[in-house]
Image 1 (spheres, rainbow, N blue to C red):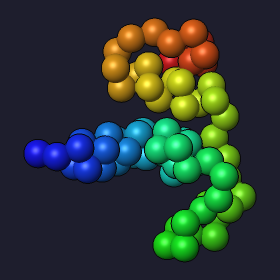
Image 2: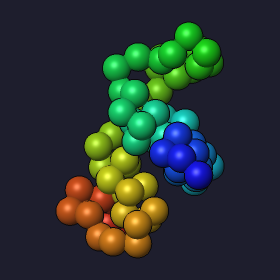
Image 3: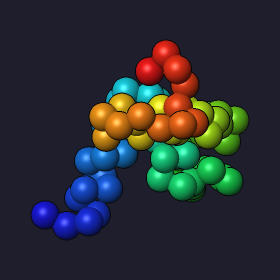
Length: 70
């Protein structure tokens, strides 16, 4: 087990539940798409509230910025 594996597993979970835009935001890749990402990544952005919602669901803890419906 390594930090890379933990990051990969977490980001995979976030992507599967909340989509690629939220996973990129959760990973801190908000400014631009990587060279390997699909073109759609350039046009889709996650809001801070969507990222906070994913964090709240992942940890099972409330987050003050999370969307209320989560």
